[in-house]
Length: 511
Image (cartoon, rainbow, N blue to C red; front, side):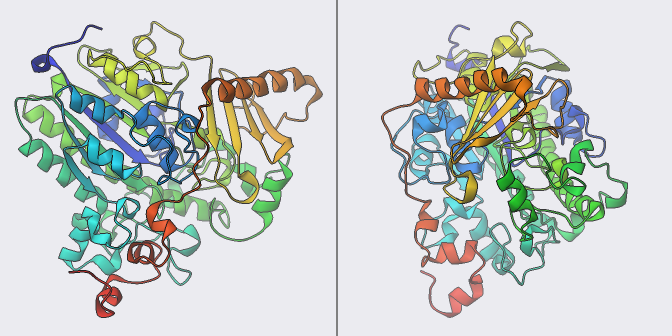
């Protein structure tokens, strides 16, 4: 596309959620979830039903997609962001700001905060991972809760053992619906749109903190889903009945260990439905806020000239394999992400089935807006796929270095038919699935003699990917600022080791 003049350039509304299973959208065919506003965007655009993240956890996935670079290109493959070897990459919002866009980010960043300060004219955080280590009030949503007298009820971090949500169980938040993080994100997004300059196109990143755990809707939001009526995925038997038989031995050992945490292992099918109801409630609440913003764009006449993309940083088991949450392997439910594009004069009510990945979003948005695409990006322009003129990518790769337990370095490759998962610490105990015959990934073909050629070919794709895109940087060892300072106040609040009122009483709060 040719570069457009600033006056004719389309606005860009980037909507994202955290940990959203791609199947959990009405337009994607989910039998129970209520997402009328996302469904409407899909009806007015294109649903890419085989889009994949490049890393299955928050920080590295977000850094990758906003820079258009693979995680190992950045040197970020775990939630270890402060030591990034690429200090000032040309992020998408920075690129757009240089081209005359007014840029804003509302919600969860969980990227490198120095990048944010360069990229966004307007910045409003909702997650303590973005706060100063010594002052959680630098997270705008937390400061809002302080002003409302609700800071002691903040429940977007880790939970103590004596909390009703301990063990990663869903629970009812004490924060009223009008003050919950979804409502706050919607309000702040509308405030930006109402006060922005009229003579410049805008880029708004509306970034929801949930449905990432803790699954904690407000009491007023409960009742939208009756757990007893929910439909569990067909492959929920993987844990509920089979206890991961045939999967890598270290996965079976971990699953049978009995401890609670990632991933959530339900007591039984009824328990799984209860947790799923909490999770779907949060998705519906996010959808409501999306509807408010889209309606505003329609009322102000800006909708027709606005590119909208909806996506998530990674998936959630959401009942698949009989589990909730993430952090075990790189299954389809975690690797695949929701992705919807709606753009001026674009296709309507279309679904494309080709492979694409989050690292492609940056160049694709540039192409849709008629803007130059930086040459250094790892991602590629997927407008031809969205317009039905391409079959998409041959394969996509996901990489994860969490630095803990038996999954410290994991790679997955997905082709049209197969998924292979390779564990660097367990090179003889991996996973191979044939999606043509086994879309639920129940039968592990890693040791199958009939599939050794596929195993070798797919492993070669991973090695070629890493070798081709590997840069000179090493993986950063530092942890996110608040995690690197366990004595800092923000760390204590985020990990529920201390309530805000106790910190005030002890004189730990700066004026």
